[in-house]
Structure formats: C-alpha cells, structure tokens
Length: 434
Image (cartoon, rainbow, N blue to C red):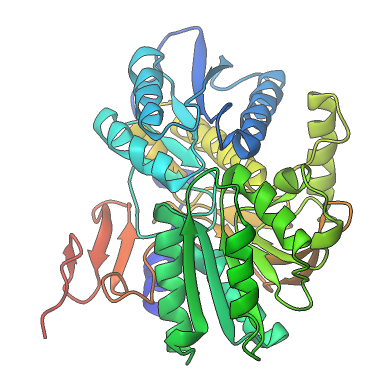
C-alpha cells in the first residue's frame, strides 16, 4: 500500500474542483475531435489488445450518441502497431503529428509504452495506458489507469501468504521490462517478509514462447520440496495458451501449486480449456462476474455493440472505460482539448468504476482502484474470493526498492515533478547521502 508520507502528498488531488482551473484557448475549429487508438491487432499481443480497440470504438460511439464533445463528433483513428515495439513509436508519431489526435488510448506491454513515451513527451500528447504495469515511472503526458504493483502484485502475494500458507515462490514471466521490474519489487518484498533466497525461483521466457514442457517440469520439481509453493505469473500474450495447457497436461492443480496471474483475464481464458485450471487465480481490479448495476449496464452495452453475447469483458477494458470518461469530463471542464489544459483538469477528476464506487485521478497520474483476487471457474469466468475493503491509491514509486522508496510524483503546479525526493526536497530523484 502507499506509505503515509506519499499518500499525504497525493490526497490533495481529491479536493480540487473545476473552479480552480484556468481555461486554455478554445479548441481548434475542425469538424471532429480525433481520438487515437493504438493497440496491436496482429502479432503475439493481438489476443489481448484487439478487444481494447473494440471497446474504445464502443465508448466513442456512445459519446457521439450523447452529442459528442464540445459540440463536435468524436472520430476514432485506429492504427495497428502489430506487436512490434519500434512500430508503436512510429504509429504514435503518426497519430500525433499527422492525424492530430486530441488523445491516444493504447499500448499493453510496458516495452510498447516505453517505446512511445519519448514521442508523447516530445510532441506533448496525452496517452491513456490501461494495463497493469511495474511502476517506477511517472510522465506528465501519461495517465496510468491500470494497476501499479501495490494495486495488484503486492496484495496477491499477501493473499497467498495469509490465505494459502505459501512459503516458496516461482516468479514466472515473459522476458521484458514489466515482469523483470515487478519481480524485482516482489523479490525485495518477499525477502522483507522473511522469505529465504533459496525459496524464490525466477524464470523468463520470450514473447510467444510455446515449448513449456521443461519449464513446467521445473516448477513441479521446485514445488516438491515439502513447502507450499505458488507461481506468480507475469507471462503475457499468446504464450499463456500453451503455458496453461501444459500445466493441465502435467497435472499441476491449484490445490498443489496455485498460479496467480497478472496478465490473464476473461479474454485470454476464452481461448482455453479451463476445466484443468479451475481454482488457479488471477489478480485484477475488475472481473466480468462483478454484480454491480454499472457492470451489468456495461456488459449489456458491450454485447449489443459487438453483436455477440459470448464476448467477454475484462480489467483493461474497464480501465479504458474509466480513462475515457475521465478524459471527457476533463475536456468539458477545460473547455478545450489542449493538452496542458486537459492534463491540469484531469487531476482530481472522479468517475464511476464498474466494481462499485468512484475512481479518482491522483496528482501522480495514477488512479484509485479496488483490488480483487479471483478463482478461475470452469466457464472461464473469475469468482472473487478476496477484495480490499476500499479503493487503493496507485503508488508509482515502490516503497520496497532502495532507489525509489523516497520518491513521489506530483504533477500539480508549482511542483510539477515526476520523481520528487521527499528526503532531499529535490526534483530528479537525487538519493540522500549518508
């Protein structure tokens, strides 16, 4: 959870009102307001990202039926970066410089986000990033509507420790920045909780990895040491399909070695035979099975729009729902789509989430979210077995890494800093000398 020092620095966001925000110059006189959609529609990440393109089209269509925004219709500009990380940067540049979009909703992997980040900062564009990530970043041009580690990874480990009695840990991930940084945080956290290094096994495989027989055998062997063992999975994309199939093939049951996934939700499970996976876990901030009026209405609209009652919803879709509604509200408050005016107006904006309650945008450009642990069911849905009592503020800089434990982000003026050191009182993350 967020430390008290950091939380005090963030909590002021919830006190802001539209009255205190200066209006920027009026929006351009073009016929439409263009909205960029930057998600992979082909390649290894299409299994996860295509549905995010679809939900953005739904949200834009729904807003247009309400009369659009600032008296104009919204126009979706869809590009396909094709799971190619350098291509993400090229497509982002196209959206901002050629298509002149007002905001972009996109990316899934952290490597894609890292690829486009310099483009958004150089061109002063706005990116809404809807997926859980490793933290250790805060940009004035990015709004992080997915979970930070303290809103997913840390609570999941706590649950396994307290409820399942887990003592040995397999940190299994795809080989890129999100799993590596998340696992670095989790290793530090586990060791702080008294877990011995010999009781932690870390392994990485490439994107699209399919030959899981040896890797799952290693997991089984590691779990046979007489201590309760769990797998914390940051495996991403279509590699999850053969991974879960091999778990089933080798009889890895949730009662023996539970797997908790951070990148597997209803969309990924829809392509699997889930019967052997019943009881394994996923940690998110939203499940399709949530029984709130808001969620029921969202699912009904989704099925009507997509013309199929078999299509699932998932956590990153909810993050886009939250982020899009926040953007609409901020644009209305600012009276313009100007980046700086909208970014200022975003801080403090609060909109309904689908799990119950309101999510708010904090000064660190992260939001408040509930944390849910769910068990995989035979029908591919996730049944909530644990959740936080309230909303958790996203912590951009981990309290468990020496290099970031004293850092906060606050994009309000006059501080306007993404890595302010609370010990040195300086922006830039300088480490205090002893």
